[in-house]
Amino acid sequence: MLKVLEGPSLAERTTLRLGGRALAEVRVTSRDALDDLPGVLQRLGGSPLMLGCGSNILAADGELPVVVVSVDMDDAPTIVGETAEGVVVRVGAATRLPRLLGQLASWGLSGLEGLAGIPGSVGGAVAMNAGSYGCEFGTVLRSVEVFSPDFGLADVPHESIEYAYRHFGLKGCHGWFVVTGADIVLRRGESAAITAAMRANYLKKKSTQPVLARSAGCVFRNPAPGVSAGRLIDEAGLRGKRIGGMAFSEVHANFLVNEGAGRSDEAFELLQLAKEIVKRRHGMDLTLEVKILSWP
Picture (cartoon, rainbow, N blue to C red):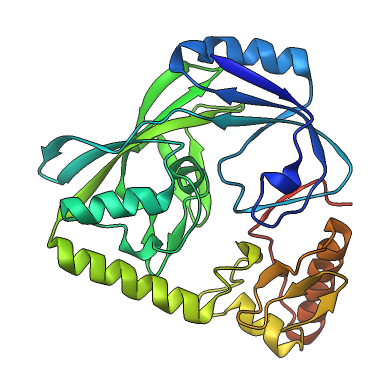
C-alpha cells in the first residue's frame, strides 16, 4: 500500500537536521501499490524527492514544493545464487548499510568493506553511488530493481546502468524513478578478516571525520584527482568556521555540521563563503556533492 503523510519536516528526515516542510510524504510499503504512485504524486503536486536516510541532503527552511517518496519494505539481505563473478545477494532499498555490511561479514562475503561507517540506506547508496576508501557501490551492482512511469517495476541489468563518481542513472529513463532493491555480487572471503577490515575502516573514518555529528557527509566534491576539497577549505582558513549554529568541522573541513541550533540559511552562507574564498585563492571551482533542495 501507499501511506500518505501531510507536511513532513525535512529537519526530522535528514542527518543534518535542517529543512522546512514538504507538501507530503508517500511511503511505499508494498510493490503491489507502485502502479498507483504516479497518480498519487500527480494529485499531491510538487516534485518527487526520493529519500532514504537523508544523509546527503541540505534542504532550505520554509515550505518546500516537493513530495517525499520513501520505500518502507523490509526486504532482508538474501543470497540468491552464485556465478563465476561471485555470490549474488538481493537486498531491499530500505535496508540500512550497517545492517547489510554486518550480514555480509557474517556470510564471509567481501567487496563493500570500505563503506563501513556510512549511515545511509541501500537505496541511497545506489542512487548516489556511495563510496569510500576505494570502494563504490556501483562496482558491485549486478542489477537494480526500480519503479518508474517509463517502464513500471523492472530489474535493470548492469549494462543499462550509468554510474560515475556520486552519480547513478538509468539508460532510457527520462523522468523520475525510485530504487526498490538491488542484486549485488560479492567475493567469498574469511568472515573474521572481513569484519576486521570493516572495523579498521570505521575506526579510521571516526578518527578523521565527524561521524557522530549532525552532518551530511562531504559537502563538496574533490575538484581534481589528488586535490582534496577539505584541504582547500582548510587552507582557506575555514576549518572550524562558524556562522550561527552551523560550522565547517574541526575534524574534517569538508564536513558541514549542525551544532544544535543551526539554520539552513547559515549553512548556505558557509558554502558560498567557501566557494568564493577557494576560487579567489586557488582559482578552483568547488562543486557541491551534497544534494541541495532550494538554494536561496
